[in-house]
Length: 215
Image 1: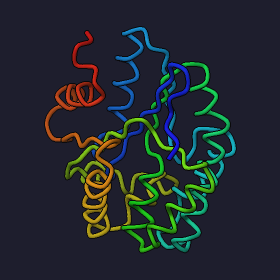
Image 2: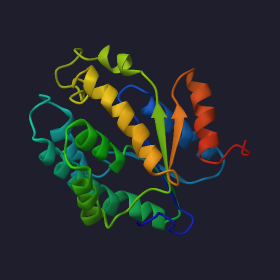
Image 3: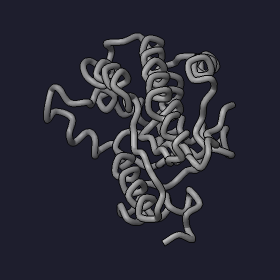
Image 4: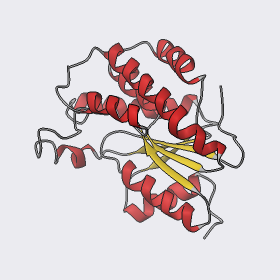
């Protein structure tokens, strides 16, 4: 398994179900790290590079059943390969900390646990497409906050809400899957409660990545 120890760069990913507040927390963390003199690149998956963003548009819009699960998994890995080579690895080589809103654990959770693709097959595809490249730390936000996403469900037919519309049973399965991923990868993953105020969660994240002694 490839880690991210490239110079002084560090790769941190955020995972969790829909609506738990990941996008908010990655921005807060990036801003706080920058205030502490760390050069930070904030990115996302699927996406994060020009080619990967084109693939993202195929994945996050439209009908919930538009792709076969394996097709989705392959598209996510294709986007990830582009993202790594064009964005993540160059930034790490330059000594930056890279924070990504989602990474490979989401493919394992969504297409594996959620849609039934064999998890060992997904891990092998990841190994092939990324040379088994994993983050140094994965923060898994855990909570029951899908209502944030569902409240936005019908606002715009062109919204990036395809996964949000996959049903309550699917999303509860996602929550369980991320907790299982964390249990199976204790050296990399840390579970952070998404309950409470934004500031309370941000403090938990700060401690989770080992920055509790930083102002």
